[in-house]
Amino acid sequence: MYSQGLIGADGRSTETPEFLEAFQRRIDAEEKIEPNDPMPEGYRRTLVRQIGQHAHSEIVGMLPEGNWISRAPSLKRKAALLAKVQDEGGHGLYLYSAAETLGVSREEMTEELHSGKAKYSSIFNYPTLSWADIGVIGWLVDGAAIMNQIPLCRCSFGPYARAMIRVCKEESFHQRQGYEIVMTLARGTPEQKEMAQDALNRWWWPSLMMFGPHDADSQHSDQSMKWKIKRFTNDQLRQQFIDATVPQAEYLGLTVPDPDLAWNPEKNAGKGGYDHGPIDWDEFWRVVKGHGPMARDRIRDRRRAWDKGAWVREAARAHAAKRAARARPIAAE
Ligand code: BYC
Image 1 (cartoon, rainbow, N blue to C red):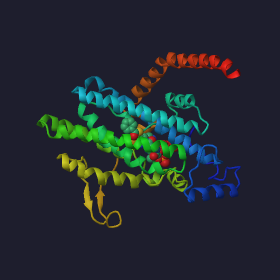
Image 2: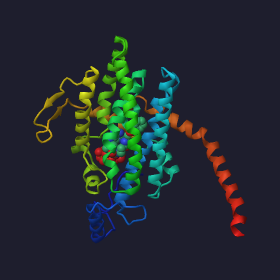
Image 3: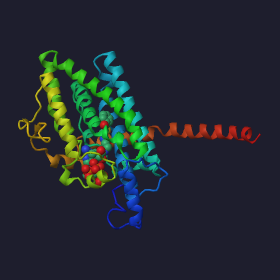
Image 4: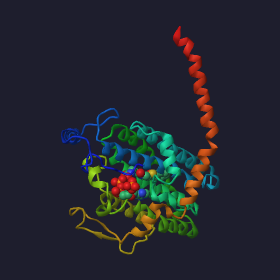
């Protein structure tokens, strides 16, 4: 349902060229587009698709980490992880609200997730096998999320851009707590260091895949860049992430699992950057199409949580109806 029709950009539009040009002029002038402003249908659909997927990722992203709350190694770690998982739930809620301003309901979006029609980030289809995974998720997954989301603070659509500002502040805390977990393990016993290395080995490549397909295979990037929804391409952000993260791994004394990784002083217009080995795009597409190792469990758990929460939604609706009924005569006086 949310696959992009690009009405207004592919000639199938009933929108006039004048309308589309006037809209593009607002974008080029860096004006923020607000929910009640006229906008091309393709712009609206692109945002519903991207913000919806982003919201689902935050909500599904609670599962692999939530799995470790009861097994965190100390009270301090448990409290920090609880707070982090709760933050992700909050991010999902801001994002669903931002998407709702575009005329799609939370129920519709949830239904799309549960039926497998809507995507969520590939990264959350991998299992969390050890405590070190929780550190590495904070370091790499939240690190990749920040790299992707800082530019979204300048997205042309106001509600998405504003939601991202708070989300990025919280993600930045998450990244640091993750890095600190990994640092503790890397400086611990040889077994703990080995645990950290094993987690890095398993999460490195899936983290690079979070940025999406190569630019040449990214069907939405060109139009999303033109509309200033995206400010950088998938490959540009992936490169920035690699360049920022490799020195962090070196500082920890851990090895990035890529034998082709090499500093290239010519890269990034002479500023230098890392060359890296090939990404397994077959694995990426398999996971994106719903065949990741934990895909079934994730959707089953989300459906279960939604069903279990039915009584809460029902109670909230009954409470709201009672309050409204009580307020009516007072308002009439
Ligand atoms: N996983 O044309 P492209 C978090 C899909 S949550 C799955 O390049 P676009 C966190 C893509 O949707 C992090 N699918 O697309 C939470 C498209 O399919 P459709 C989530 C992917 O939109 C808890 C097709 O492939 N962040 O940080 O221009 C704990 C072609 O791709 C993926 C966001 O969602 C993927 N990795 O660019 C910790 C950020 N990549 O829709 C952390 C917002 C691509 O045509 N989203 N696809 O069926 C974005 O920035 C962009 O949507 C993407 C993709 C860069 C992800």
